[in-house]
Image (cartoon, rainbow, N blue to C red):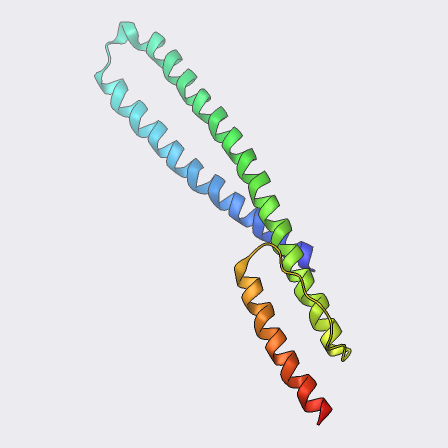
Length: 132
């Protein structure tokens, strides 16, 4: 379930990035092309359109490279989040089994570390209540 959530999150962020950039790029392409076609002499039109399309193709290649880099970056972040959540889940399972001496190791994100410290305080209280 956890892997599904992190993969889903990575895919959604990547698709959002691709969608937003595609809309902006297509709008810019059409607006610039329309503006320049109105202001260019007819004898220069073929040369201009060829160079214009080459520039946009190069921008598309850069966007593609950036998108691939974003995917790998998001994938790495997702794995780290998955590790921390998995560690928290294991710790909670141990507490549920009344193993109050369980150890939790959060290595990646401070938010999870803060949550784990709060959990440890709760466990101390539970342990003290059971001793009484």
